[in-house]
Length: 181
Image (cartoon, rainbow, N blue to C red):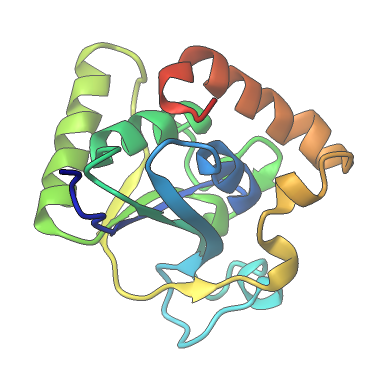
């Protein structure tokens, strides 16, 4: 008898949402990845307003997953390898608070797992001075359609070839056990 599918959500931001989305697209147990915005004070969000930095929203991904197949901790392992958590409000050439490293926890269990995982990374000297923000999830604003599945739909676009593709290849090489064949 198989377990009934259960759905939980992870809300993660680590620079441009195209990169984070691509990192999670083919993970066993991940049911959906949506690019969007969260963490600001504005009552709505769109790319034009968020990219000014004035809304304080971050570009994030809403990751729908089955915890019977993939754990929140595994998602954190992928997340921390998919971006540089030691840079404040930037990833590479993407600069501004909208590109900050952030975990919006949905439950107290996710908060606890995140805190322990960050401490573990720091104690193993994997990263020095992790800047990842840890905040309670409030609301998710879905990004415009042209941002969804961006890497899959635009593999020849220069940003995809230069920035996203090397990250995805690195992740698949280091964490192949989590990726669908």
